[in-house]
Length: 440
Image (cartoon, rainbow, N blue to C red; front, side, top):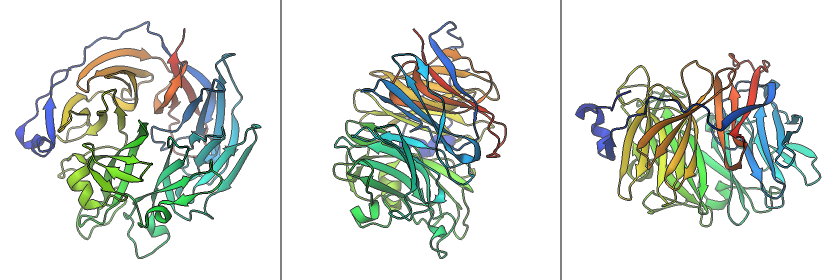
């Protein structure tokens, strides 16, 4: 691949926000590396729209890694790895819901050791599967305490032990006067290890915490990923909707990339530069304060849905996202790095698609990717948000659909990867589940 040229016309909007640099991936494979994909469950998962967070976690006290995925009929499944014995448990079903590709599970561990697994949500109340200290599971609907029509749950724990689950709310399901693209963000918070919950509406007095009522009806919030760093939650999202005045549509257009920080100690948002934005982000603040990348509005899809955010040792975020600014056959995978004053952008590749990323050094990310219809994972090294080098190829027997790095994970389970099933039919359980990590 060759260094990219950015023409003045196509980059004008982006240059108002940041600066492009050039990048070139070294055309080589580092064969014989130590990263390996181990099959943990065969013919166990169905197609899902899982976002790259919350698939698993490492329990340091128990020295076990817990993972989850969506199996037949969109039910939630669980498996754990004992690092002492090197053995995987038998997968178990932990929760049931209706058939829908969005109903995937996400996991967080409460301070008392319980595992909280949110699942079964697509324009419907969240469900919560809980594993008690004795290992038994219970599954319940949160509709009685949070009658939202939720999708895309994202669970994080604050330093004081409060558990947050962020989700998108489909307003039209509860109010027919709303439009199909009225889909803001909400959250639930528990201060007692998941026993009771309060909504963001109760805690802030706002009807939503992240949303808009734009003239162009770009009012669907798609949060791609959230990550915790130094007690705060860093989040990256795009906006979708009808795209024009008097035009409403679900995902008709998708544009722009946004970034903000949520402080659970105050429940305030702030900009990447630290400016306080209060307890709610509306469209004005989004477009003036939180936007990172302006996409090409002449296209229907100026960006994608899968993006990644990490915060480096110097406290500055590095993001990896899809940039379709040039309207080519394939979108660019692009990196953005906050330099303390503005965003610097580097176009990385058009050949590979993003699974997820993880920090491997103070200024270095390992970016996991797939290539077209090929099987396997290709890892790249991204240093300081701009130096891009192809690293190791990791074998899998079929093409992957999803990958999810476990934050703070322990080898050999650094990432959960799931193979493509070839169909969105929720009764077809043909996908495999892999654990990706180093084998010593």
